[in-house]
Length: 368
Image (cartoon, rainbow, N blue to C red; front, side, top):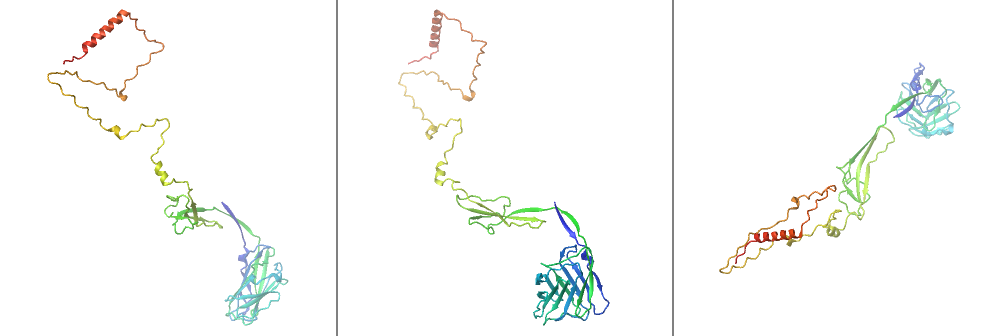
């Protein structure tokens, strides 16, 4: 939130009250407008007056304006031609200013004689001056670098006199300024849009087109050590004064030389992959390991007159690791394994003989 303070000068309206004589050749509609009507304040003033119906402002004629006591004039030598302007239907040129100015002949030339003591300003049309039209309205601007300072608070009468027309007067009121405060909420907005590579000011690098990317910069695949430039449009809008507009936001990027491996080295390292920690390296498998083993040779032919009785073939396969039987539970330390009964030597001999007989009975017969 920002507070703005300014002063309302009510004297501007009152200064337009008009007083003029009833003579037919009097100046008409004379008024003095103050840019600031506060007491003890230097103000720019504008005096306007209308010539009588048949009167013109011509060469060597004058317009004299007098201020009452209380108004403070700058010194006569401090006024400059830039402090005055004069227009009688045509913009004229003020060629000289001071206590005794020298008016140079010219169709549009005037000078201004200042009198600090008498508080008067006199405008004189130089020789060779092209006369104004009859009944012209004269506008005399007073003050720029140098200004007249207002008196204390009161009403004051200012008079004007032209060479042919009679005098006229206007009243101005000097007042105390009234301070007024206004609170204004500031607004500041930023808009970022993409920009084409053509309009982007660069540092000499490769231009990147961001016309479709207002929130990112698509540098894409870059070459190590090369420069790249991208731009985005940054627009700033605000209701405050003094805010500058930044037309472009430039981003420059140069990738380091070690960003990418040389092509030959990258190709050589491509098959190599690191193994996870804690896992053994796999056993290499060659192409020959997956070939079907050759068929066994055929049995030799049976001699004539012989018979061979072959026992049925059988095989024992290892159990699948996935179907391995569970391990027997470990005995509880509180329940020791039972000790088998002791066997005498005679019992052991009998057991061995029984096993031998059993093996003999189960052996398949072989007849030749």
